[in-house]
Amino acid sequence: MNMEQKTQTLVIRKQRTRQLGWYRLVTFKLTRLAVGLLFLSRLLALGLAVAFLIGGAAAQNPATTASGEQKAKCDNQIRSTYLLGPDDQLEIAGPELTDMSNKPVRIDGEGDVQVPLAGTVHVAGMTVQQTEQELDKVLGKYIRHPQVVVNVAEVRSQPVSVLGAVNSPGVHQVQGHKTVLEMLAMAGGIRQDAGYSIRITRQLEWGCIPLPGAQLDASGKYSVAEVNLRKIMDAKTPEENIQIFPHDVISVPKAEMVYVIGEVKRSGGFVLGEHQSISVLQALSMAEGLNTGADPRHAKILRLKSDADQRVEVAVDVKDALNGKKPDMPLQGEDILFIPGSTGKKAALRGLEAAIQTGTGLAIWRMP
Image (cartoon, rainbow, N blue to C red; front, side, top):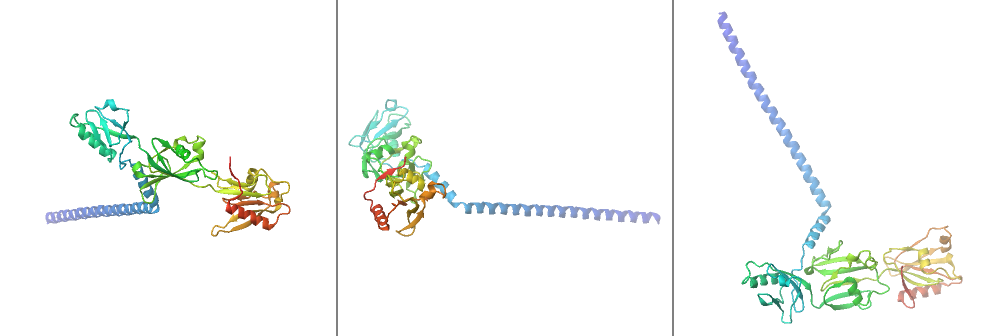
């Protein structure tokens, strides 16, 4: 009997041990599954957060992305659509064309060039790439796998427009290598009222303008850049005196000016140039100071309204500014500083303002 009880007890223990083992196994599996689900949920949340941040950054900087794409497009442009014609000069190079290296070849009046081995080849009306393909085809009869490279060394007489504040604006026919300053010289030079910042517009078939600030216009067909003429003339940025290509447009805008009239020693208009504004005392200094009969306490600034073709009067006490009792007032573009005489009249003031508007009888001075 004791033996049977021991056997039953042993069997029960084994069953309990087996049940406990299954329980522990199931618990372990469920724990691992829970940990895996928790990890996946956190990974999903992190992915959504990263996607949200990237989307937000892209939404906040669409202009930057578009500008980058535009710049890349501009940088990749080459002169691929210019059609060759008579009097263009080409540089033709290739493995078997050593005699033509560094020797420009002119396209004759019939549109042909003379090439060793090939003889006369007609290239007028072709692009540079088409000319390379044609020369490869012709020379292929004599040379195995020719690899001809063609560059435009000099273009025939082509129009360049110079507009704005120059002495001889219009369309100028140019031939050969011409720079910005040379084109301005051909246009008679800049006028006294010209600004120091000029704009160049170029068709993309001639590539982008090689200046840091060059951009494409809204149509994507032109490269536009501004050049500081003053810095070129002062030899501060000679690299900006770039080559001008056919159909370029050079625009020279009029500079903003300030006018000093009345009881001063040198009345007239003063070109602001690079300066956005000057002060009243600086303008008086350029006008060489006050006359003996001046009334500096009742000076006036006549300033154009931004939304109307009318001027408002701003009183300024020049005497107190000279004595340091009041701050020096800034002048804006197209301001008129009027210094009355001690017995000046309002009618005289209006007459001088009319003279400014008609531009008669006033000298124009450039700031040093």
